[in-house]
Every structure is written in structure tokens, then in C-alpha cells.
Image (tube, rainbow, N blue to C red; front, side, top):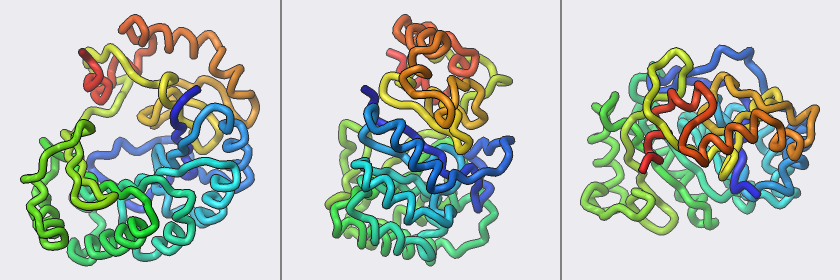
Length: 282
């Protein structure tokens, strides 16, 4: 039994952020019918669906229908967004708040993205939607995962949060998950930038990952990958539109990958070149 699946309902995004590796895969959106098939295939295996891998989930025109399907099948949904479409699509989220578990907003997305948006208007929009969702019990995580990278506007963002909460966020202690509690169901997550896995990169010394232990990913075309960072589908394990998940997880490649992490000796070249996975080294 896994904990979560990252379902890429679209691999298209409205921004061009510096921290994102992008994807060379053909642009694709998962239809509501395809999502329903994926959700049915995952029902016995996971409780949480994360509607992202690559792409901006709020850009999907059928997001409301997708959330309805997820709710009907008993899933709790988590969404990560760059936040720039919350002013236009926030109503879809609040209308489906009952199925949402968490909304994560990458506040560092605006810097270096070329979006040309007003930071003040952007932050007000994010705050408004998060406030409405929190009233309905949805967790909201505000991310600044850019320490050591493009972070010149972090001070501006932190001042905004201080004005809204009355507390300097950086004076708050971190929880065990390293987030700071800004209020009820409101968290600030500050992390270092990390190197996305890339077959052309040097080996990072990664030893372990929760891929296929805690999570898996499903790309927009149905391809199952071991984790949310396989942005090019470099480790395809099978296709959920064609093969039952039980067979995919029992395949030789999936078992070898799982066993490799158990031995702290990643079997896949991509995994040995993942900067994020070094966080799990002990």
C-alpha cells in the first residue's frame, strides 16, 4: 500500500520558471475520462492524489470535473501551483474544498519566470484563496524553495506575510517537517534549491528514495514512473491505460528499483543523479 500518487493532469504550464527543468515531452492534458480510469486503477493503492508532476494543474479546463471524480472515488487531493491563476481559478478550488487536503503555492515562482505580474497583486490573490480554503479546513502551504538560488524577492514576500499574520515568519520555530506555522492550517515552507534528476548530470551520492515505497507518478499519457521528479519519464514502468498497477509494480524493473533502494544502492541511472534524494541519506 502506497501513500500517494502524483497524477500529472497536464504537462503544460503558463510560466517559464528558472527552477523548473521543464519537459521535452509533447504537450498533453489528461481528459476527465482518462483521469477517472487512472483514479479507478489507483483506488486500492493510495489515499492521496497529488495533481501535479510537470505542468500547472490550475490551467486544466476540466479541473472541476477532475476534482469531482476524485471525490466520488474517495480520494483526498493535494495540488501544487505557481499561484498565478488563483485569481481566475480559485473559485473551482473553493467549490471543491471538501475533496481538497492541501494546496501548496510556490511563491518563488514569480521570480525569474518572466511573468511580469505585480508581486503585491499576486500575493493578495494567493492570500485571498488560501483564506477561503482554510475556512473550509484545507491546509495551505506557502513555499519558498529557493534558498541558495533566485531569492531576491523573498524579503518582500516575508514582509507581506508578516503584515498579514502580525508575526515575523522567520522568528517562528520550525516543526518536525521543517515548516513554520503561520496560523491555523497555514504553513511556510522554506527549503534550499535542489538539482532535479538528469541522466546527463554527475552522480550525486543519492542512496535512498521513497519512490515505489511511499509514492509513484503517473504522467499525462498514463506512463507510471517511480516518483514525482521523473519529469521526462526516463524510468517508465508501464502504462496505466494498458496494464493493471499490480502488474506494473511486480515487473522486474520495478522490483529491482525497490530492492536497490532497500540496499541503499539505486539501480536506476536517473536516481543516482538526483539532488533531492540526497536529503534521505543518513
